[in-house]
Length: 199
Image (tube, rainbow, N blue to C red; front, side, top):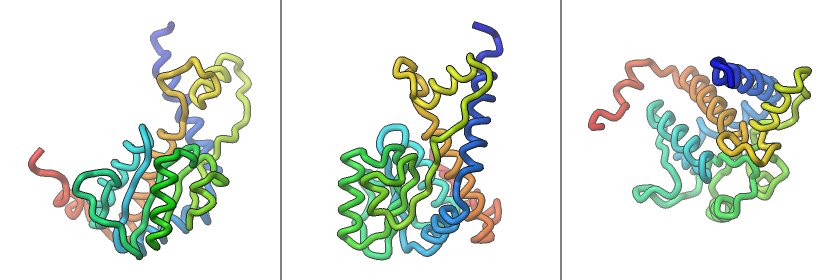
């Protein structure tokens, strides 16, 4: 194990995220930003690590002045028509999240999905889907190819990372926040004023 192994893995992950970013559709991004800016209120959700990405996204939306909530929190109010549910789900098939997505549609809310699987159960009912593509070209270096397969979850024995979805989804969410900041002409002072001050 070399001293630079961690840094090399970070660079490998960064290169994979760059490749993913290059494949995200401009139309998907435009649809997503439009749904967020037009929503009355925004509810974010996901399971496991995807849920942590959803929480971070909801927090950043609050910093920009949006009315945002995290599904499952005790103070989250009832969902209504004109509200938007933003779902982070690599598979798009997680039963608890898919059930909630179907309930949201029944209520009349809009649904956006960030996923690896646009043709999934959630993807088929979503109003907007941002596809974070898992397709990739194999690397020339066999050892690097093995590491990429580990990150993508193609080697089940590699538990700590498992998949690049959550990392790529988090980067996408933060990039979307930057775009929304420009759309709303937010100033840094505005964001600072909404940061928690009793932590």
